[in-house]
Image (tube, rainbow, N blue to C red; front, side, top):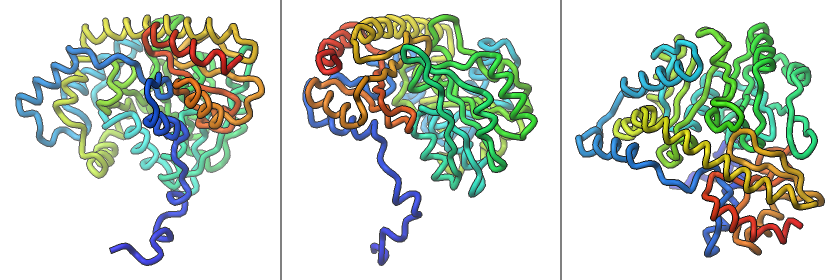
Length: 391
């Protein structure tokens, strides 16, 4: 039976929550034919067969029961070994928790750390889901905008970051390499921020999902390379991007060992654990074949980024930086003051789906985001369609 005054029964922050502007474009695209979808962050490659086969074999073998809350042992050990090798620091299994997606990881962190009125400082433009997740967890969100630099790039002012932290700042969310901008924090700034957060007792939530998608070095700088096991640092990661596994919904955390039992409880009372047979696929992703696939994904995105950069940089109204990390072109369009309306126009007139910059916060307005993790042919076709509108 529907409660009387049903809308009033909702929490105000839930009732007032707006749908994602990325999803708004995506849903509009369902109504059109021959759409080239470059609006969400995923490749046009399907998950490689060796990963799917491992999951299928586990499914056929009956791995369909409840499993370990923080991940099957083989995957926890695999993540610990992968992280240790990648960053040259010992990451023990007591520091690893497997989650039902990177978004699930963020959700349980914020539910664990934030009390009503606590603040999460978010560097923007940013992936919008973290903002809503903080508000759902009764937290307040404070924003720090990256500074725009020449030709469409961005930089972080650490003095502004320190000044933005108030007495109720509980955690700092840093996504590097960044979605949507491709900005990447360097070691010197990481160390400065870690020292500051140690002194102030502020948690660093390091979203490093795009760590492997870097074009000038093997891996992006990580807080794990400079933080001790008990430092206030939680690394967030996901299988989605590097291994073309967006639909699998598997992620992981690297955290202080003392948080392991806490996250176990949080998982019990949210997802009750990721499916065991899917985790077997993730084990395969972390093996030698997965490493080879990751290298191929980097080269695919490097080529895609160069195609998009060359085409966009030749347009007089567009300011875009050459991509150095992640797989997005986040470009500014002169004279565009409503990116949502403009993205809808592009979709309607060209059949190309882009994400509006305003979806990533006020600092993103005036921009559009294009995911270039697709084949050269698809990207070239998309650019042929949108260039006349962007001129």
